[in-house]
Length: 357
Image 1 (cartoon, rainbow, N blue to C red):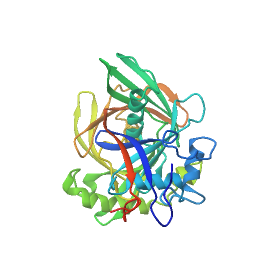
Image 2: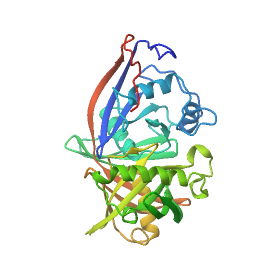
Image 3: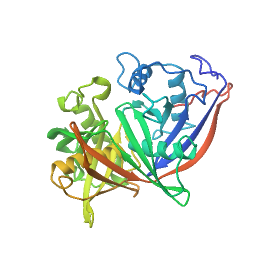
Image 4: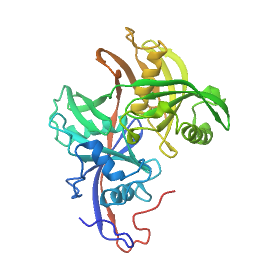
């Protein structure tokens, strides 16, 4: 395979398989099948660090053949500002079926629940993991924040849903004061594979709807910047797992018979909007709701978590599994294949790999 040159376009062809989970896209690239060079590193976390480069934060990846492909697939006209995807790489050891480097328009994330759901379905659809026509099968995936599991639910030979078991989630701070252009708010912070800041949208005088998106995008940027140096956003394993990844704006809806019901929109990276209810963000919300006594601690209740486009994930604290560093959570949703693509780069295309907008 020929990679992108620094000064002029060169022939390129990349195959992808695309899914969505709860409305959020996920573009899968099998690096070995695509002929990409192996990414150096002893495990997925080190491979992510390699791609980002020394001193990187994930928002300014180091140029190279792998990141050329990320930009090629995420930028317009082949992608868009809300595109998300992942490079399938070898797992850390034989205990997992695959590894993945999650990416978006600004770089590489440490966790992605909706992507984990999509990868579980893809592993079954591609034959990487053999699945029954009826019943469940587990797909174990190494991600930069640890090992996660996608339990793929099968009915009549098709995938009916996927349950994502995340790395342990924990609350790291409550009521951190932040001043935004809409006023002062108290921000709750939780880690669930990535660091999420949660804000009750009513405190901003808004609701979770499409009309509020411009104001929520602006507030999300302000909150993320204000918390950049806060100790509750620091991960003990270092800067590549630290910092606020997403800001979750949530509102309470009437409880369902099974437990709390909320609607949210998550603003992540440098101003991306999660179309889904956010998989790892749902884990963060579960940790906070358990801390409030609304879930967990013997309560057999489920969070019904709605997105801004009306899709739903359900989440629960798993009472039968304990972890010393947080709560074990399951998040369930649906994922569907949206296409298989062969993206090409015409060497005479003056736009080259594309552009961000």
